[in-house]
Amino acid sequence: MAQYVYGKSVVLSALRSGKKIEKLWIQNGRNDDEVEVLARRSKVAVEKTERKHLDHLVGGNHQGYVALVEEYPTYDLKQLLATVQPGHQPLLIALDQLQDPHNLGAIMRTAACVGADGIIIEKNRSVSLNATVAKVSAGAIDIIKVAEVTNLSQALKSLKKEGYWVVGTSLKTEKDYRSVDYDMPLVLVVGSEGEGMRRLVEENCDILVKMPLKNGMDSLNASVAAGIMLYTIYDSRFPVRQGKSE
Picture 1 (cartoon, one colour):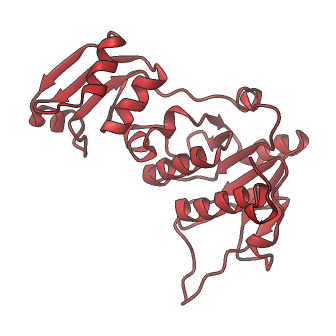
Picture 2 (cartoon, rainbow, N blue to C red):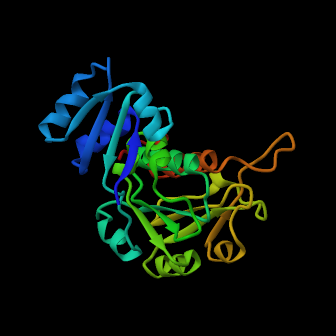
């Protein structure tokens, strides 16, 4: 099923990745040669139109660019693992009932920046890949592969059998998130907005770490917490102070 995506960076990413685009609408007055040149080169149908028409199509901050694209693909866990390239410590992110598309898009963007291998979500319990996710991800949706599983706890058990260590954040532990050496095959679990990880998901974590919270604050935004953890993992694997390079 085709879906609308919008925003200049999203459209450019779709064009550069070779994603199938059924039609592209560009607002009159936009003179970005790169978007139109890439579209024409890929034989994408382009229509110049008024902003009012684009507002009607998506109703979002489209920046003058809207495209009708094929549905973003998802994979099963086995397919995702098959795409992990050898020669490095793999990093996956498992999202436990994340509902906000802005959080998913932001996590995808950070995951792409640190070179993560993929994201795992639970079918029917998490936000799906939609236009808002694509917009917030700033093109990362075309880079980061997403696997859908029916049961996240069972998926974590399967990953542990494959040699992965599962790390999650929790207020129930005293282990500081900065005290762990993350240079191992890793699954980072990110809990849902407000609720955090479910009990069975938490019980399947090998390591629980705590992120300090001051001034009476009881939680971090899911995408912020994920971003901090992902760059902490990156720093643990590639510490400049030890001269370790990528």
